[in-house]
Length: 103
Image (cartoon, rainbow, N blue to C red; front, side, top):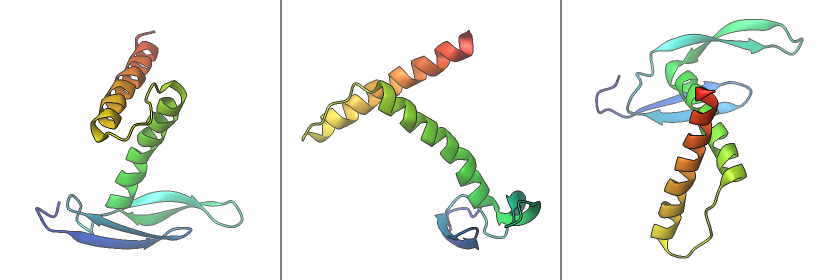
């Protein structure tokens, strides 16, 4: 990693991707598969921070989908109500996921 240093990475995917990280060295690259305009898959170089982000975002997106579907949260002007309902929603989503894993 960068050990406390902030690194900036800009990478051209379909659109420019810009990221800041304190956990990844900007020189670390991996290969990812991308399709060209003809649909042919190619291996291209990608910064490790971008690949890590994309891997994690899949889980975040799924959590948001489940939370939207099963949320009990209510709108509130009080900040602690929003945090309380988020934690309840988190428990509900985790229970739903664990139920599927146990089956």
